[in-house]
Image (cartoon, rainbow, N blue to C red):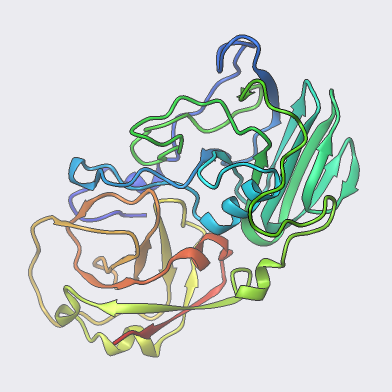
Length: 323
């Protein structure tokens, strides 16, 4: 996926450096409880609520694409909302625990197994030596795994999030990676301030708020370069999510948006939700790991991109104008 005309290196293809197999103690401090990644999946990263305030330095917010799902997982295990957890992509991941732990899994609908036996989503008590396997997403794309006590990861610019475009933050997980949990924390979470859900019961269905729907409708504020196009076409046509989408942006396929103005733009700042229209007329919506500048004109900005975090390839996307 092209991230903008000046970025000819195609940063959409970068998914972050991989954390090769690590030895105990290489992440975290002595005495930390550790988890071994048995199966990393195609893209599992550490995410929190992101690093804000650095766009002027060329650093996007990053953070969980489905931030509400991560906050819910943290709440279920008694963590603060800003605690870091794991974000999986489509095929999940598997983790082995060296000590008992309490885990919550939210987000995409997926088969979850503990030592080979299916367990419901929500709060899961994991025994020492057990393997928790978050399987393939059957609806949605991304699952979130929160661990009571949180992950002991060094923050970068105030966040523990992996930025897959720049490489800031911890590397993406690989088979054999060892993760440390914060020490001196009871494996049994304290009740969260918000009303809690009982252990071993699923959280409220994400589909209830449309996040796991086969069709999503996104509100769009037109501008700043809507006068370069027949902007009405953006709202008349339906688009499909391309399998080339990732954490940097959601590429859409469908009827191209007609361009009415020729020429090129100097690089301009872009924000989360910006809809860039490259030369082929196919819109792409920037997500959490977006570049902070780009050269293709931006026809509008999506007001809330959360639904795209769980939009599977082939899902239908429609736009509606906000006024």
